[in-house]
Amino acid sequence: MTEKYGPHAENWSSDAYADADAYLAHRARLIVALGPTLQPGDSVLDLACGDGGLAEHLDGLEYKGVDASPEMVAAAQRRGRTVALGDLNVYEPPDPVAATTCFRAIYYAGDRQAFFRRVAGYTERKFVFDLNPRQYRVEDVRQDLRAAGFDSLVLRPFFSPQRFALPRPAAALFRVLERSGPLARLLLAFRFSYLCAAFRAGRKM
Figure 1 (spheres, rainbow, N blue to C red):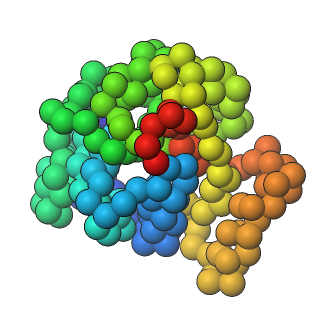
Figure 2: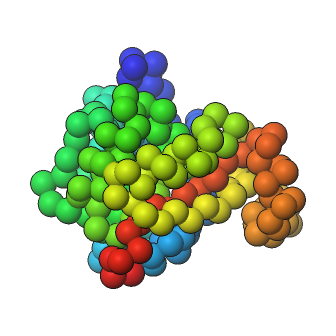
């Protein structure tokens, strides 16, 4: 599973995204704001973190990453990131974290409900991940999250292209489109994804 990523580890973020800074910065803002808000000093565990490129955009948060590729872990550590080698299906951090994230990797879960249950066991505030609605039914994922203990789910369309960079006015327009309700859902029928925040409604926000 991880062999194909090793040769690309050293420049993963810059090669995977046409405008890595803009893409990851937008993702980071939503990690903080979507659902229960994260506060300075909160810990974030980034599953399938790649080279840890997200870390530099989570200012004030304690970032820890996990990846199953030794080459990715080494590349992240060379960038000064705190990253461990591990499989998201079985990894558990030594201490609970405020938030857990998982991007472009939820399909690596061998048993999705069991994976969600494991994440719920060590995540105190929220679990943030991306979801392609053309690949997975949102209601199916919602039911698996409920079974794992996450009784609330907030969805936000995420309209940042991976393969091409947008001029600033176009990027601003896409941010507006993310909040456009029916129009956003129509666009999601053809491309892009949701950013999701799952949490327990009774927990302190």
